[in-house]
Amino acid sequence: MNTEADLEEADAPPPRRGPQFGTLAAVGAAVIALVAVVGLAMLIARAGGDSGSAPPAVDAEALVAATNANLERYTDIEAAKADGYVPISAALDETTPGYLHLVDPDRVADPSVADPEEVESLLYSRGDDGELHLLAAMYILPPDQTLDDAPEVSDPAAHWHEHSDLCWLEDRPGLIAGPYIDGECAGGGVHRALAMLHVWIVDNECGRFADLVGHGSESEVCNHEHLPEAFEGMVS
Image (cartoon, rainbow, N blue to C red; front, top):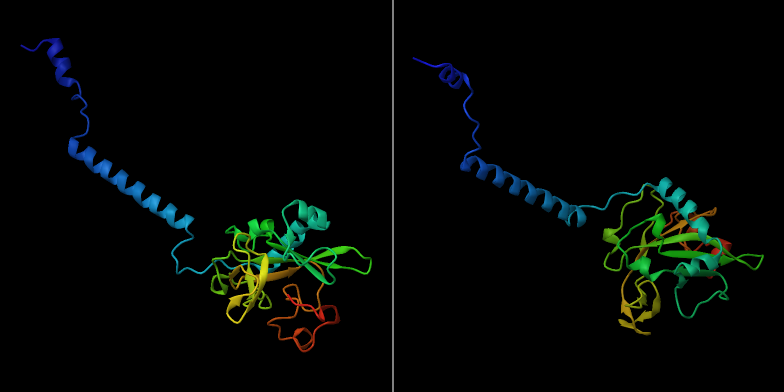
């Protein structure tokens, strides 16, 4: 005869059991696989995707606007010098007539590209008032990149270009060591064709992306044979 205790035991749910070893192993393997996949994806993302992918395009209007905004702090050349910018060549200084390029070698060396917060070079010119005025930014690709790596800019007038006739200081990229003559660096340094893009923050009859001598321009007033008066005798 069943007692009351027996009946309660019969009605009770079966004791809970942990998952079998096989189930645990399957779950563990799935977790490990997921971690491996996520980790691989993060590595690819940090590396910029696969090597065959094109760099992201740059919106021209946004680049011009952001360049204007971020260069306000360098209107005074002393502020630029205090922030690491130096003349592009030891042969140049603030007494140099015409245009003066200032370059920050640390910004040239870093991996940022067309970043208004990290402009590699600044372009000044002396005005009729005798003061140096900030005219443009010059974005420079990292030394290990070429024109093939340059991002497309949405304005067809935007023109990445490079100089194959210059040698650069190896330990301070972006600073000119001397000319490249007959296959040799006449003043030492290393021969690289650094790729660059000008973005003007002042009105320019040749456009916001004009080079100093109108490289690549289809406009007659901006080509090498018909330089604007302000550009005569100057080279970028």
